[in-house]
Image 1: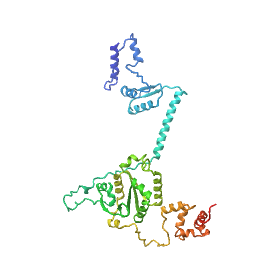
Image 2: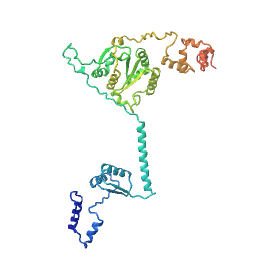
Image 3: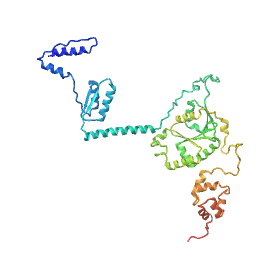
Length: 408
């Protein structure tokens, strides 16, 4: 029987050979019933592999080793179905069929349909989030080493070789050399000009000035009000004024959740945030720069100096806090028009005068008839109503209160 089976197998193999046009099949004896049964319906050497549904890696190994053409799922599992789909996609030339055994209108079918619906909703949620996500814009900010740093300095007085571009200039206040930022700027290829500046700490261009504040220095400046005056003076001379808030390695342990005014950085976190918001509202033309390190600050300076003129050192040194820019010829000269009220004076008056809000103090200081508090307290009730409005009665009673009367 084995010899006849081998002969029949050889005959079938020869049928697949294109060079063989006609193959004569050897006759089989009629009395051999087992051979006839094998010839009619039985397939030889067909393995049947049983695999539990939870063993994911064993299933993948069986698929790769056995290369099955049919899979029967007794228990429906969505993750296993996805693995079979991947197997079919990787073996697209293979005839592969999946049979799923399942009762209709059963809890098993309901669990399977619920898993499919959850997967569909998850993909829809991903598509919605992808449609509304902000696309990150990243630029390559890495720069080559400045060529001027490679110039041989042993040849004293030797000219700079041709083709070497001039180093960008930054005017730095002398007091800033206590920090590491000027040294890093020099290493980045900037020409650092040290000078004594009254307006600003760093002058990048004729119209760009930067006031640098470390976190601890910013806290003291906001509490003392010094930064309010500094920013106001810088805006008088530079149209682009930046307040640089720079962190450092010593503040990393004190920063909580990425916020510079959180944790135990300062005892007056809430007050500092309020004062910083007051500074931004009082000087809307001021721009804020947040930096995590001096290296990051140097990158900011490089971006701000792109396609801009070099600063004038003599002009930056000559600026004084009391000097104001000369009025332009095209602008009208109105000597009677008052300037914008100082934010500190507004807060002091609004907290001291009874019934007077910040908006009322602003209208009072912008009124040409009021030059001081004496004029305000000597107004009649009718004139005070026309100047202030609804809160005039409280202020009038305060101004005309008789202190000689004894309290009962």
